[in-house]
Length: 109
Image (cartoon, rainbow, N blue to C red; front, side, top):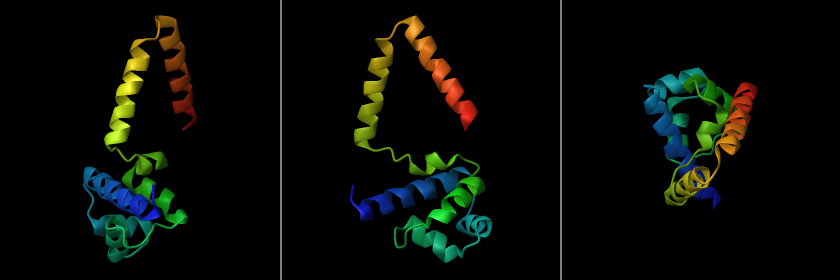
C-alpha cells in the first residue's frame, strides 16, 4: 500500500468512527487538542496524523487504538470469508481453545 493510499484509508476510517461516535470535527479537535482544520486535513488525507495524537484520538472516540487501522476493503472481506471457512472446519475442542485464547487476549487490552 502506498503511503498516500494509507492516509486516504486512515482519513476515511477516522471520519467513519467519528460519525459513529456522534462527534463533530469540532468535538474531536477539542478532545485531541488540535484545530478543526487539522481534523479536516486528517480526514481528507491532506496531512498525516502524528503518532502522539493516535492514542488521544482513540480515547476521544472511546475505542481501542487498533480500530483506527481496520480498513475494510474487498481483499479484507475475502479474507473474512476465508476465516469463516477455516473456523467451520475446526472441531469443538479446537474452537474452544481458540475462543479461550481470544478471551485471554481481550483481558490484556
